[in-house]
Length: 115
Length: 113
Image (cartoon, each protein chain N blue to C red):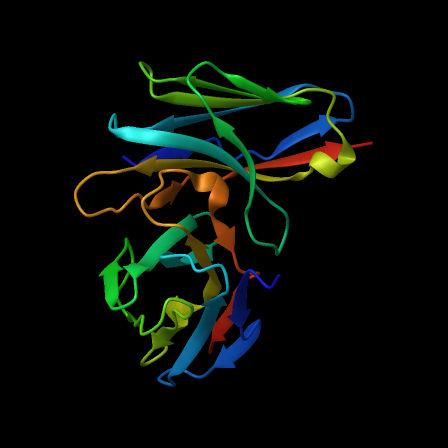
């Protein structure tokens, strides 16, 4: 039972480089989301999706793109990395339409450093 | 005002102590409330949901006061393994938020021998 799988776990980028953080879930969850976590800031929502073909912005979307071509995958793209994007990124999923957080599943996190 | 606010701590307590964490939320339309636990360099994991009538799970008791927009978590008989950051989480369904989870910044607990 894989749950939510994020890759890579660690990545160092140079300013201006692009990269994609991958997220996949095997639970047929409609809702998927990306958070970033910075010291003293808590988890902040970047983008989310309530189903294939549907994405929307969260609290801090600037500098990030997402797509949802399948139910299983929700990649997060950094088009031109900046040092301010140094953070820990978490992908999460849950069934949509249920206001119940006890079914949200997080990936193990991706540690990104932009130099 | 931040939607969900918590005392950042750290709370340094001896084993066996009772410790209480508080959390306030700003949106009265908030509908669901939770406490998550996050260990260092790990993902958040659900500790317990919070119900209006209050609920208990072993040494952990959660309470909700909708009138004051206040949530609490009480840990009795603290164990070394309780050392972690505790996140207050709120779901508010309004506008296009689609029931997104809003996290507080977390309260760090360190239980010492």
